[in-house]
Amino acid sequence: MPRPIGWSKRDPELGKLKIEARIHGNKLTFHQQAGRFESWEEFTPDNEDWDKLNELAANKFQRGKVQATHLKIIQARGRKT
Image (tube, rainbow, N blue to C red; front, top):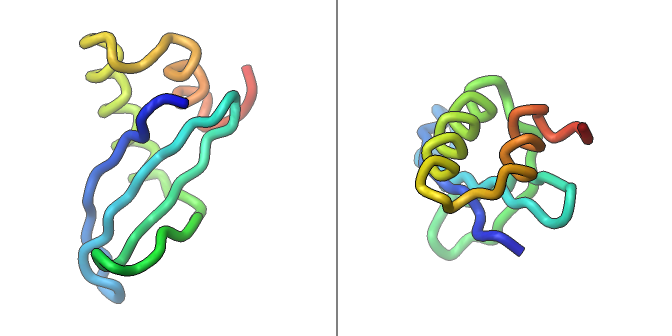
């Protein structure tokens, strides 16, 4: 299983959130954590999350940290290609 791609963002209600996109096989899931000692929760991403993931995955692909098949899954927004 590849390493998750993660970043932080601010939510007006929850404050600072840690976001991770995890790929297992051909399945892409998004998880968020509100606090350091809180558990990770799965959530549905918005367009801003997809844009950020595309940007980070493209950068990691250039450095050889993301496989081409995983980049295609991300670019297809989680749908099988």
